Amino acid sequence: MNRKATALDVAKLAGVSRSAVSLVLNGRGDGNVALESQQRIRDAAAALNYSPNKIALSLRNQQSRVIGIVSDQVVTSPFDGNIIAGADAVARSHGFVTIVMDTELDESRDESAVETLLDRQVDGLMYVTVGLRPLHVPPNMARVPSILANCFDDRPEAGLPAVIPDEVRGGREAAAHVMSLGHRDIAFLAGDSLTPAAPRRIDGYREAFGSAGIPVNEDRVIQVGWDTDAGFHGAMKLLDGVDPSSRPTAILCANDRLAIGVVLACYRLGLSIPQDVSVMGYDDEFRIAKTMVPALSTMALPLREMGAEAMTALLAEVGSAPNGKNDDGGTAPGAAAGAATDTGPGTGGVTMVPCRLVVRDSTGPVPAGR
View (spheres, helix red, strand yellow):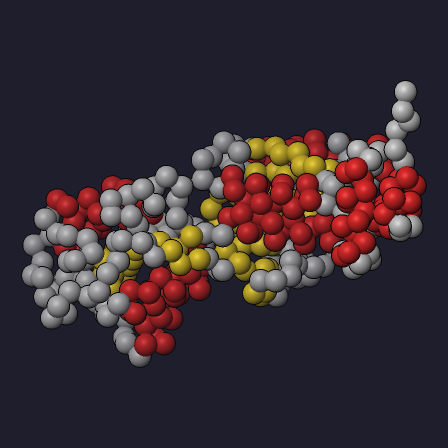
């Protein structure tokens, strides 16, 4: 029987040291081993069918190579699973695996979910939410390096680092897009104030008007809710029985479901999109925005990017903490790199990831004469 290849065999075949093999195959090659040598090591490992012994590695490093993820509804929701997908992809690329627990919006289960993951000796923790919101952080998250994704610490001091979408910039770019098409009478169906996303998107809308030197008509900003029927009734209020010269030429919506309602209202009133009214959504919701008729222009939430950004920052913190754990019971400061960062209160900081403008068929030039 052929003996199993060892790290030393890989090192000899690749012409490198055994320590270089260990660094590369355990996800720590960048910055420590030349890229050309990294590729030779991977090629040699593949040729010899070699993979590191994860159990032995964990014993040596006193790390489990496991990251725990708690979500409020992401696992059972069709919407934000991409956050976890992005986080998991980064974890796997660095030789970690993830374990996910979903509390199904029951905040009383938060602390016990974290405790269950800590009992599994996770090296770090991430909390992920459906929809941007403040989070009452379970206190036992302080026992290991931890980070928040799509939510932020509700404590005014010493908060955990968080990765969230840049909602203000998203609202600004949505308004700027329709302005670039000549629109000036732009309404905004703005969700409600129960979530921080809505007022931030309104702030962005106002910033776009300010940058263009145009006063905001506050009557055009209506907080209606988040569902399709709210969009329908909000659009009817703006459009039904209104002279064409007095109705808005573009309607921005705080999410794609509201935009569906606006489109339905326009069809009810015999208005064409975008010839009579341009409609803009927000979220780029899967199986909705792209497949609508007409296909919906929208701002895409950076779900996968937020998950990847948060996991990258967390793994950096796991690597810097003694034995991958925070022995002093606190969390080390730090935030992900590569995105706009707003240093918030406390040591955590907030990293904001830009939303992406997606232009499709529901927005077009301002109607003639407007």
